[in-house]
Image (cartoon, rainbow, N blue to C red):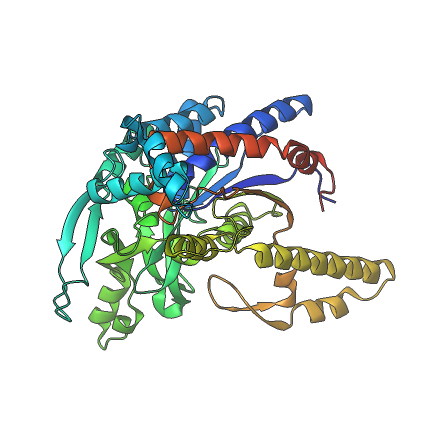
Length: 485
């Protein structure tokens, strides 16, 4: 039976633009709770989180956090560093500089009861300002692309530059970021999307089985082997042996339509070109099986705004393939910045768009969590039956004949058929998932992810901190329990 000394903690940061400030507040409260509790329980030196995974702005929070821990060899001060990052990105808005705005808005609200609150109006016009003028340390207006396809003047695309954000990241994180389990360093996982492949792409700060750091995705098979001694390989490989680069973080946050594609150099292992006649051509292909190509990436939130599934798959892959040992059970902490529930029914255009956005990007991993628990139960049942057969002196060969049969299930990564024994060995037990849900207030607006005003950023940090502490009992009960389920 797994004990509390064996489990690992995973922190999942969602994407959500300026709502990432809420995640900073959540992390500050979580760090304070867990670090103090670990000392009391004799777990001093245990990482606050073993895995930190993020998408979009969550990827940026994760990078700043893991970089700090690696460079300083301590978690102490990491929460303050993350909040400093957000204080740096926040900017003063025009609305904040107009002292009479609230009184003026309240005056008009007296005559028109349908008007929004003055706080909603402040946020609304703040985002208008930022969308037209940009945010100095986050993004700036870049290009206006006219419609040349349909000759429609209304169909105009406005692009922003994320160069300011790149500089902000480099100011608060040291790239490239390479960490290792041996050094007791947290694992950084960032999720992006290959636009043409249509699949998630995970950048990993830990090493692979061969000791290198790389991202592999696309189709898998023998035709994509990178060398004569390999049984198979992946279609696309991004080598980053020195660690995760800042461009990988930007790739995770390149919001479609608003930003240009992030371009990355990818090794394209084109299997069809490997079939050539002539001994010399065959040798040439074996020695040079890959071609460097530029591929294009978008925000990972399109497919995996809450990268729980990606974190679980990568957790299993590392322990099964690299460590070649039992996979530690996971206790997962998810920050959901897009509320799934809302008391009021949206009745105007802005409210309708806001609700649609929350439902599009909220945490949709509850099914994944339940499936992980079901799989864990099935594995426990199978192991119990195997032990029962052994206790009753049933021939081991009979049991092995069953375990070696081909299963219908395929490997998530390679697509290869598994055997029944593979369904038991190296499976990930997700013992518990804690979700911190950001509460939607009555002042919410549709473009809230663009609101980097100093007032809103500080409010979000405070809300995240306070709402996390409200769940203190639940959080500590899970971390302390021998059997959290």
